Image (cartoon, rainbow over all chains, first blue to last red; front, side, top):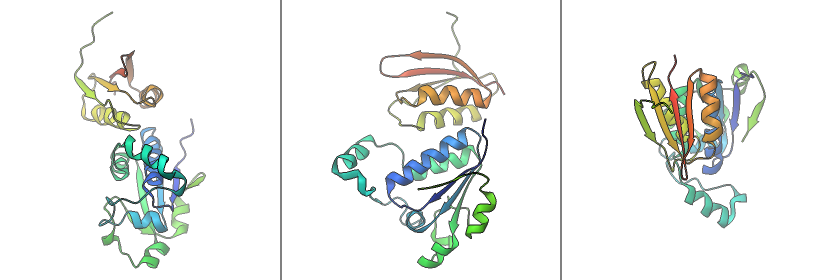
Length: 134
Length: 79
């Protein structure tokens, strides 16, 4: 059984991609794997506490039909799935310090789901396996 | 078939993956060793995920019963 850390770099800030990432994080946490998440650019922007529950749209490949299917399916908000993942396992969510600077953000601006901000080398300190970029 | 006493029942029908599994994990964590928890799920992913998690976490899958449009999973908290 491979118990290596699941390392996710979240770049995209659309609700479908963040939902897919949250499901991966929850599944890995359920199966006892550590989860190490690094938020860059648009994903980081989506974790701003004043925007996290806003509509972040869907990836361009969704199209009208895909969007209708996604909306119809419903389910929990991705932030709620991340919250559950953190409750059941060792899930750390880090804000990329470069993206924080780019947007002029401090940790105060982010949802409490985000544990801290760190540089890319610190992220790789904890990434003891492959890194998935979403 | 022996009757199993259910200590807690969770109706997670209509909840998409990984909702039913997350609900089960929460109930197991809150429960006492020996408790039997039932989860009703209409999510297809639960059919593989719940048995996989129960095995990994070291609990007992008492039964898996296909019902009309959903599946009933009965799990015993072992540790």
